[in-house]
Image 1 (tube, rainbow, N blue to C red):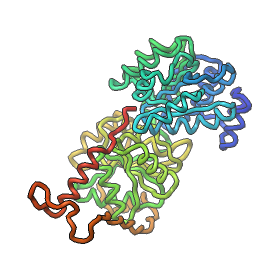
Image 2: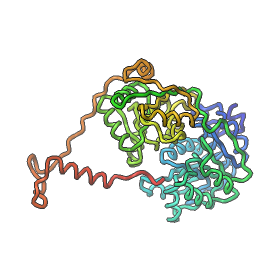
Image 3: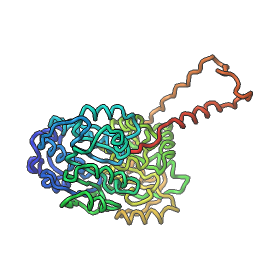
Image 4: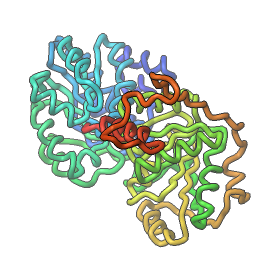
Length: 438
């Protein structure tokens, strides 16, 4: 079905067409007839199924239809999302639709200065896309009110109903007008979602285009078993192809270390994890999305919400802790009708846990014992990208000339070689922003 067939207003149809979107995906076909009329909806669809447009279109259409004026500090639409990256990507989908109807949007999340966010709210915006932590901060400061919200969206509802998010999400939803339209969307509908549904949705309709564990048919899953000494060469080989690929690790330290190792070995890579500032995250994602680098090494912060076109391979460098993480990580490839490959790298001692995880995820794949130069690996990687000489880091400039101590001895002790660099590194780390509250 086309968006015209579904009754999407003409300005939005034109904006969608300008972006090459004419045919609606199943989740959009099911939900739009109800959401465009103002009904509350609970929507479930696998990662990459088109959920963002499924709520973005009716959100903008309803606000345009109501024609209420834009007021300072009083947004009319609210989208809640669990991560900064997801909030940014939702806003990128919403912006052209809002602009087509003469409306404006903004994002609110932690990890960056609140100054520009407060200024945007003061000037007046129609739609706010926010992470709960910073939004609650700004509400407590009086920077905005949710009294005028006509349409509220909860994206990644299962994650937002996790124990850490649930109290804040509940407080925020309670501040929106009870008779406004509300839409909850997610790949799975578990955890505390039922509590939120019972309290905040009215006469809602459930639309589910697949089972909670269903996965994309165009996604091929591989389990590569390697001894510990072969794991590093295998991961390097999997990263060496010419297409875009995302490598998932369990910890921030592993992600940073692996990205550096790959880059030093001639395969440019960037990392994405909670220890990066928002500017660093944006810069690394832009480099990966724009094609400057082909490899993104990430923790689970990228498993939800990060959409980059044409990711051909996802590698679980470490099997995830639970099956939902596997599905969300894997969902970064084979999106919007494209195909993709998923590899889980497994040590022999991880076989039992990994197979249990895959059973829960309803994934059928037989473990294959490989090395980095096995035929199965070579075939999967395909053409190997040319070696890229690592950029030489400029040496730090010191005043005082060669041999100068720039301040002399400290406490009468002579510093050991490298001691100053280590202490500077500690000071830098002490001031480095941690992950966003949002």
